[in-house]
Length: 282
Ligand code: AMP
Image (cartoon, rainbow, N blue to C red; front, side):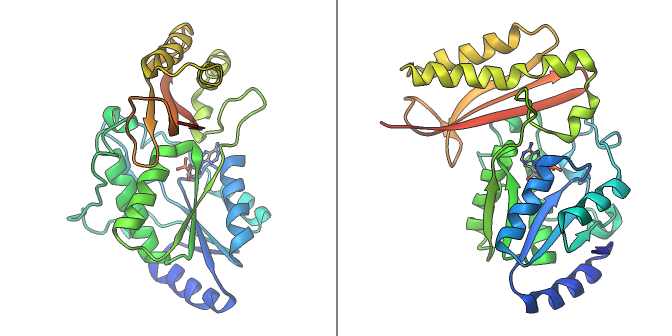
C-alpha cells in the first residue's frame, strides 16, 4: 500500500494506477471504524484501484467545534486500510491542502442551510470545497460516501451534477452497532451512560418509521414523535428531528415520495446524527 502526503505524489500514483482501470476514492477524516471499511470494500467492488484520503479538514469545522480534539490515529488507520486491501492512502497536512487561505468556495445553495446546516453554518461549504479539491487531485472514476451523512451525500451529488465532475457517486447504507447506534468516529467521546443514551437517535427514527407504516401521514405528527422520543432521554440535548424531501432536501407538506427522516442531538461533548430514508407511495 502506497502512502502519499503530497498532491504530486498521489497524482503520480493515480496516473500509473489508471493503466489497470478505474480508480475509486473514499474521502474520510480517519479514525476508522467498520463504516469506513465498508466504504473501502464497496469501492473495491467497482474499481481495481482504491484510494482513501485521510484529512481532518479545518474548513468544515466551526470556531467552537472539535477540530483540535477530533480523534486521530494514523498508525492504526494505515494498518486497517492495508488489511482491507486499499491500494493507496492520501494523507496531506493542512499546508499541502491549503497553502493559501481559499479565495474560492463551493457552496450548494439551500441544501446547505437545512438540518445540520442550521446549527453548523459554513460546514457544508467546507465539505463541498474539500471534496471538490480531492476530486480534482485524484480524479476518481467513482467516489464512495456513507448514507450516515445523508445531507453531505446529497450535497456532493448535486455538486457533481452542477459542476460536471466526471465520476459516479456511490452510497453505502449506514453501518450500526448491534443496538442500532450508527458507527461514528465521535462515539469515542461518549462515556458509558451517554453511549446507552445515544441509542435514542435510532429508536426515534424507528418509532417514526413504524408510525408512517401504520398510516400516519402528518409531517408535524411524525416530527413530534421523534422530538418526544429524544427529549425523553435526559442525557440527550436535541438539535433537530425533521422530515425533508429527497434528493434536494426541500420542505415536505404531504408525506409521500422519497423522504428522509433525520435527527441530531448532543450527548455531552458528542454531537451525533442519524437518519433513515423511506419511499412512501403517493
Ligand atoms: P468521516 O471520516 O466521518 O468524515 O466519514 C467518512 C465517510 O464515511 C463519509 O462518507 C461518511 O458518510 C462515511 N461513514 C461514516 N460513518 C459511517 C457509518 N456508520 N456507516 C456508513 N458510512 C459511514
